[in-house]
Image: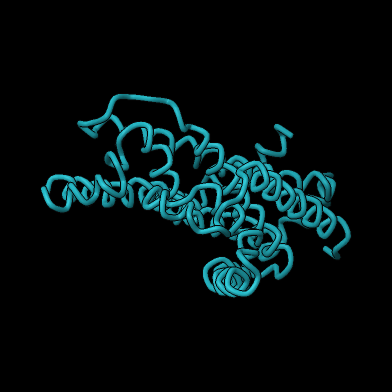
Length: 267
């Protein structure tokens, strides 16, 4: 596996698009949290707005320990970029026929696809590490906050969410094999189609939309605003362990279906 990962490194180390997207992704995570952080500071600095915010939110969302939930929730809106990176890495193999050359050179089909899935795992892990340091920074900068590591389970939830996006992106890439179409399908499903399905299923089937692939992982990190109000809505109540199990089932599906498809497809 180490040798296979070295081959992956050789493919991306001089690939400017990969590094530009990666830098944009990380800067965007920090930037979007900075914007929300500045906004919440201004709200709490205003007496009337601050009193109302305290009534509904309690302490500032970027104070410990809430910062772990707030940062992971805000950062999760950018996970589509992680998916985009994975789509480019996988579809480039088909565009430049490097997957075929790797197999000719002795890499088995199973080794090849497992390596891609491991790359998705690494991107999800690095995303989580960066979000950890982002949350730690804003939590320390928040004056009303004392460092606390409680509620850090949200980092684990974020990792599952990121991995869900990355492996779904790999699955879509294997289905269509062309970068432009794969990106279109990925964005259409994650941003438009599933959101429409979630609303319809929630309305007609008492919250069944939360069991869809992306929504199930999104549910792990609820918006840390009006949570007491949200808990009064019956269909939002769902065990976190049920959600984790559901997300793991989807991850297993992306893993085995992607593996099986690449092993049996024509090169």
